[in-house]
Picture (cartoon, rainbow, N blue to C red):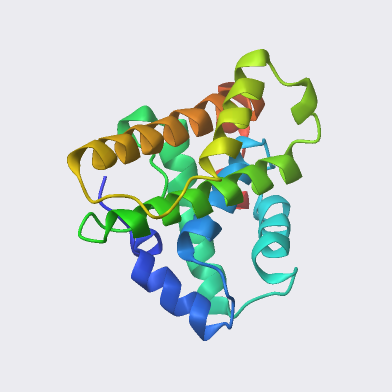
Length: 190
């Protein structure tokens, strides 16, 4: 699946900057994924309000950014619900320094945890697997950014990215809608 414009960090960053929103694109994506994986409703009216509360104090941004957020939501939902599309946390390109990529992962995880906590009031009653994953994610969010640029650190980063990816999918499996609920919805509502 090709990367749509909404998943390109530089395009989302430009829109966020134009709207004077001091969030990094990975934070926006992490918040959105947290909401989705926490089981937020799939109608735009159900997910946009909590997302805007997390990224813009509830204020409505310019239409161009709202459009980008809608595209990001649709693409992210498609990737989470269909394994063939390959969901992954948004991350800077591999050309970026490892320290920058680790920092971005930490920001994504922090935002994911905030989003899922907002969408899922019963997080404390989750399965033991989900509770363990949330605890581990909280530790990843505290990771040091000053890492050596070597193969061992790169391998550790890749493992942490994969863990964050699998954690999100596990949370979605627990809190997201049943597959039958998704198919029953009228696609024109979105």
